Image 1: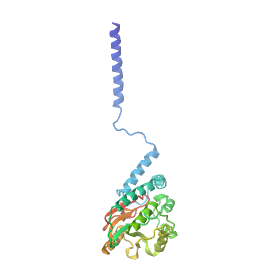
Image 2: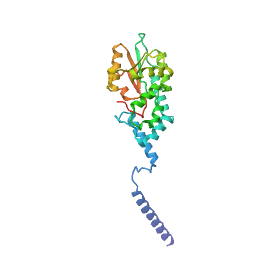
Image 3: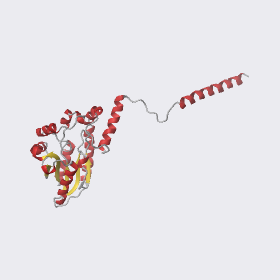
Image 4: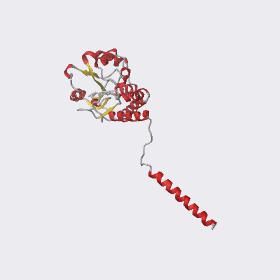
Length: 259
């Protein structure tokens, strides 16, 4: 009799436990998200925003979202930007190593200038890393100073291209009349010597988009007989349009957008 009562009590306890467990499970939602602190949520948003910008899914944006100021600052100064540029240039050099150049001197490569060869990060630090609207007069004053430092991985790429035998064309949307000499001096001071030609925007291209301007420059080079093996820029407008070359390579730049 005692054993039967003990067994019955054990069964009741098991049923009670199962009832409590069932109610607890019923209250759970599948794939429920854990609580995220506000800073983490902002960083996650800004990471998604930067990814969308770099993949050209967000277009025509004028400024960096204000809530992403610290995120962009950390990206640009914390080491990830340098690692990203280094990784991309390694891919470019791997591609370059597999190209057999002809003997006619017409194997060409195109590099953008601003934030491709030389960096404007010091200027954009004062513009809250792109949270402030573009300031044409302010940028012109900065560029005239000629203090833009070389971006080390791209400089190494430049030297490799020149030494390998490519004709390197530096193509920039900077204005020929006002920034031509300052740009030449800045590039030379940073070691960019040996390129075939520096091509700036002349009065005939005033008011035209970067895509139109750079497409036309590439067309002229192709008509001169050059074979464009590669094209590197930090803006999608550097890499869109016609006569793009055999391959294009996009460098990261979440600070501004050039149409």
